[in-house]
Each structure stands twice: as C-alpha cells, then as structure tokens.
Length: 267
Image (spheres, rainbow, N blue to C red):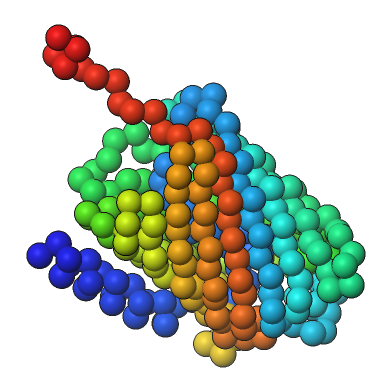
C-alpha cells in the first residue's frame, strides 16, 4: 500500500513537472529546500556548483552576460540560532568561458521552521535579500519569499516550494513573480536517494507569460548523505535557450544529534 501510494505521488509530480517548470530561476542556487533548520549555534556550509552547457549567446535586454558555458560557484555558510530559526549568507561567483572569474553578488537569508510537524508534513518559510551584479541580473536588487512544505512517507519524500520573487529596482520593481519548485525522491538505500526536481517561473501574478516565453526545467537527481557530508547531483533539461545544465551541491555540517532519552528510559 505504501509503495503504491508513493508511485502514484511520483507519477503525479512528474506530470506537474512537464506542465509547470521555469523561466528565470536563480542560476546561482538550483535547489529545492526542505523544512529543516540547523540546531542552536550549529554552523554549516553548502557549496553550489553548476554549469550551463547550452544557454543564451547574446547579451540580455539589460546587458546581462550570455549564459552559455557559464559556471556558477556559490558559497553558502549558515548558522542555527534557535531550534526553529536559521540565518545564512550567499557569496556568488561566476567563471566565464574565457576563464575570467567574476563576482555574482551577495544574498542574505533567514529561515523559520514551524516547530511542530503536522502528521507527515513539515512547514517553513525562507526569506532572502539579494544584491546581484547587473552583469547577471539587470534589476540588481531583489527579494524572495519561499514557503516550504515537505513530507515523508516511508522511503518517499516530497517538497513543494511555491516561491514568490520581487525585483526591488527597475521597471518591474515590487511586481511579484511566481517561481515554484518541487522535488520528489525515493530512498534506494540508507544513504542514497534518486528523484526529480522541477523549477518554474511563470511571470508576474495576474500577467503570466505566454507558454512559449516561459522556461521549464526538470532535473534527474541523486542525493547522498553521510555524517558531516551531503551531496545533491543533478542533470537538467529546460525549454528556452538554456537547455542542458549540470549541478552539484556539497553540504558540510555536524551530524544530527540523537534525541535525548526520556527520564523513564534512563531508569
């Protein structure tokens, strides 16, 4: 029964992937968030690496650098403040096809987790403030609100990120965009999982872009986790000029502490 329900979930999510993927997702961080946060005063770092094998070949409308053969490398240290609150920082860099390293800007983020699970479901909210180099994002300033809803049923995992992004400068300042992301995965072993991730941007609320102007991306991914180290590796294909993307996320953080035994158990 559990396996049948999981298969139905995977097929439904795959159908969603084919119909609602992405136009302008953040190239520096291709990730579907889960609802966890680091423990109090617990540090960690994620290293985001991706390469656009096929992308735009001409400058963007605001003079942005073409994306073909760009490599993005982002360092994301984070720190837990309470059992339900985490803060983080993104240091973004770009390696151009001519082997020139460039700064891609900086982002600050804060993440709040709802303290109690609701059955299999967990809830969190991530918020970001970004200052991106105009060579890679014409608006320069932006913010993001990312609700996070995830759940686990046995070996199956699902995460939904209905992201709302706001440019804070330019002609479209304060006009919200809808950029949902989803993930479904299956644990094939204790430390390994395979799955699908999707990334979508439909344009501004109330004025979604025509279908042929949206970008739709789906990634086949492998996840691995060990004490102190985690890995997410994916190969993605999208509509629009940015077709093939390969990404990896390396995570270094202290292993989870086992729960404290109850007073009854200690007796």
